[in-house]
Structures are given as structure tokens and as C-alpha cells.
Image 1 (cartoon, rainbow, N blue to C red):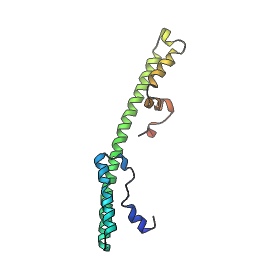
Image 2 (cartoon, rainbow, N blue to C red):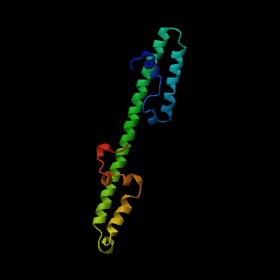
Image 3 (tube, rainbow, N blue to C red):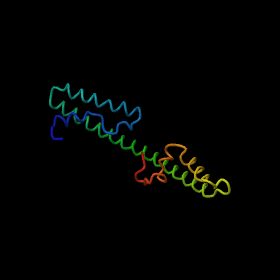
Image 4 (tube, one colour):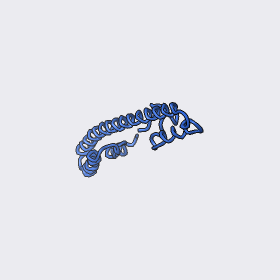
Length: 138
């Protein structure tokens, strides 16, 4: 961003990813509005510089919290993903072990499908979509 006025103003904007913060964090994001007001009402250049410096420090702290929140959310998503993959493997093993009438005329596939596709997360399992672990949803 080459325009210094736009750059200074952007320091008071809500940081990218702020939606990952809890309710307390959301309220803390609103503190940037106070820094913007301090900047806009400042009469002296030193007061503007102070408002910008305070906003930049505060925003850096928010970005750190946002990063931690995203990491937590990703970790929880990865755990769910691993459980889904384990459930799909369990259902596949069960279907392979069916004998007699249960393994006849597509019943094995019906049984497997009813287990694997019982909810949206399992339907999107890497086993069913070809998605690798590194591209798991978060």
C-alpha cells in the first residue's frame, strides 16, 4: 500500500480472521474503533503518531490471538477428521466381514453406505473423496 493515509487508516480496521475470536475477543476488536477516534480527534502530529503506534501494537496482539484461535480450530477439525477416517475404515472392515445373505445382492454395499454416509462429515471423508490429510477442512 503506497498511500500513507490509506495505510494509517487500515491499522484501525478489523484484522483478517477476527471471526475466529470468542465473544471477549470480538469486544476487544472494537477497541480499534477507539484508537481510530483518538487518531481522528488528535490535533497534534505527536498525538496522531501515538494513536497509530497504540493501534499497531494492539492490532499485533489481536493477530496473535487470532492465530492461536485458528490453530485451536484447526486442531479440533483435524481430530474430528481422524475419527471420521477411523470410522470409515471400521465400516469397511465390517462390510468385508459380512457373510451369507448380508453379503449377497449388494447388501454389503448398502450396509457400508449406510454407515459411511450417515452424516455430511463422513460423506466428505478422504476415503470417499480422494482428499489428502493436508487438505482437510478446518
